[in-house]
Length: 238
Image (tube, rainbow, N blue to C red; front, side, top):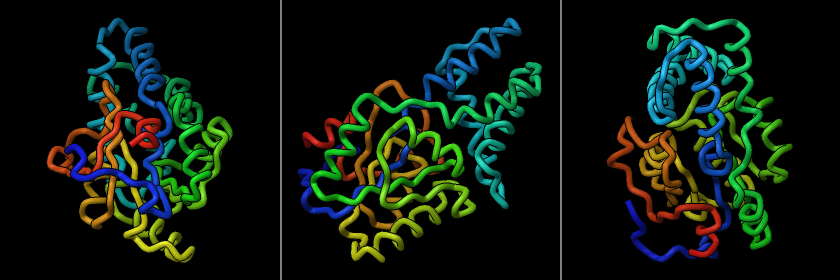
């Protein structure tokens, strides 16, 4: 769970990231949206309850093949929540939720940390369970580009399926960077640390306190991170 040796960034030539939850702070906006929706119908749920229900219902939808584009995943997850909670769901609410991935904000430490990693000479990679259009909108807010970008839309699959990782490793290898020189940084144990373990990648778990997504299911509880930090700022200090 925690670090097994001292992290030395100079040992690596590239850092790849799980974007949402690691770089982008998505849970508060999702929780606010869901809470407003259910409270409008007289239902009281805590943010933690709503996020847990959402997370559990989203996973099987992302496992369907052929894979849906992420806005459709969001809409179908909201459909499933409406059935689970016995709530009505208007087309307007459904469509607004389908666009939410492009409006989340970065964590306060994200931009500076990414720029510092680039200043230190590391290539930056993004492995994101999202569509190309939402990713492009997010980048405008973040203000940092990536040398390698792998989205669910690009590979037709969602993590923890491995096409994300295989595509990123292939792109990096074409730049002369082998897998042993790649450090994968992620908040989601389920979507990222589990497949990183299976592929033998060195990985950092960003344990952002109070965040819910990605901590359970598909072997997440038994996954092992080589290093553990609480933020990207701490990653640099480590």
